[in-house]
Image 1 (cartoon, helix red, strand yellow):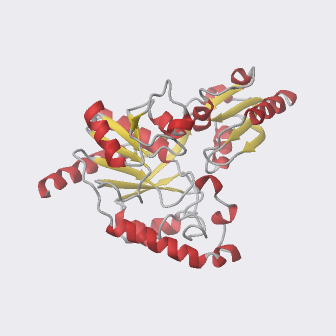
Image 2 (cartoon, helix red, strand yellow; image 1 turned 30 degrees about the horizontal axis):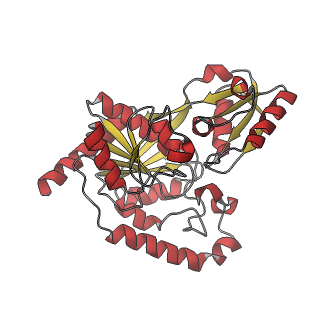
Image 3 (spheres, helix red, strand yellow; image 1 turned 45 degrees about the vertical axis):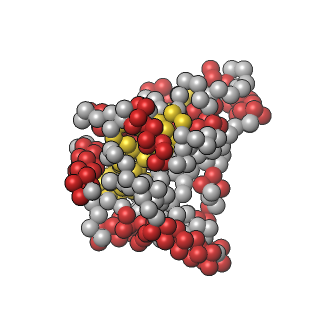
Length: 342
């Protein structure tokens, strides 16, 4: 669904959203009932969920990576739980970033695996047990899965993109929401507002009225020097590619041309040939996201493609910078309370 998110989801509700309202109501009722009534399996270690209210990109994965880094600094051994979008493993699998391909495990798990062990599985409880038993993890971070209601979450951090917010505020298929906002807020422990913009103001106010802490962060290029002054063809298959193009400009590159693809897009060889030939004809370099680069690994690439390609990595910067420690600490405290209360 995320890879096919229609543009009208991110605009003021129009006739399409209104026409789909009955289906959205049914979808929202089912999703809400699942969140309220599902039996959540309790895991033996703390579980921190990094989720969002909507489909599409909100910057969850860089946030999860940043939180894992801070967990390590606090003496913990974190592991990631992921469903693995587009992956083909039915049983729990520990990701090998050097040999696994995105078509088998998903693109985001490959990025996460560069920082901590990752278990991909539709059954997150089974993945959690594998991380604990085989990898010795004592702190689990779920990348997405906030609405899945499969395992008990000790701390649910919901990431909201300040530029896009919750779109038109409608539930799938009339909008991008995975369940009604008020239902989701019941299970959120805090909101993280990513970036600048007013689109998230309304949901942030709702969360504040519900007594939820509001944190702030932004994405920052981690190696901007390589792009300074260069003319580029930027391409991306992510939820909101415009954010990536803006980040390239922030890093000092000039986006002379851009090509946008659906989220989690698997590139065909002819598409890569077209990108390379267009870039060469216009005397441009190629630049893409780390997530797209993960999907290009272990695949057949046109001759000269890698030599032309730059990969722009981003990192999450929290404001203030002690926010990650607070989130990890509150997760640990919630887990201690859970153990005492049974």
